[in-house]
Image 1 (cartoon, one colour):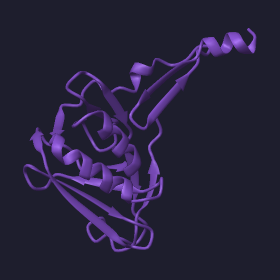
Image 2 (tube, helix red, strand yellow; image 1 turned 120 degrees about the vertical axis):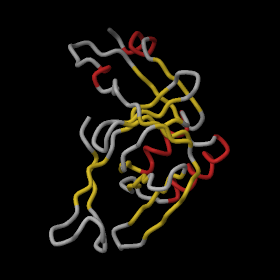
Image 3 (tube, one colour; image 1 turned 90 degrees about the horizontal axis):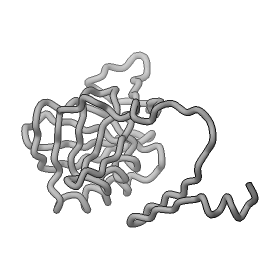
Image 4 (spheres, one colour; image 1 turned 60 degrees about the vertical axis):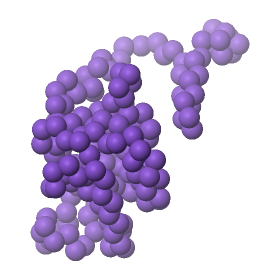
Length: 170
């Protein structure tokens, strides 16, 4: 296949500030549907009018490796918290409609912001499984949680030293 023929087979999709360019690849690949959680019945619906502020806050955390912890201790309220490598922390609280008992979970802040651009309903099952961000029209985005490891000699509750974060493998 020559270069011009290959160009004709590409697909470009643009939505807001996101652009996806794809081309067909020949080979055997795993079933992509295996990554999409089949059982994610713990739901948190973020009010549409709160999304722009939440997305802006997530993006303000800066670095691509910034993580944010989602906590649901107060019924009807989502608490997002971030602690950087220097020990500085930031917290945001957002009213949410909760169905079930969503797990305390950590996501990459930028990835969560991108997912919220697509939908307002977070569908979760547990702290280590992928989550889904759904839109009422059926569009959705799969978002992988981050594994959080607390350095030796610290306790999970105190969190004085900053935690180290790694992105969970797909």
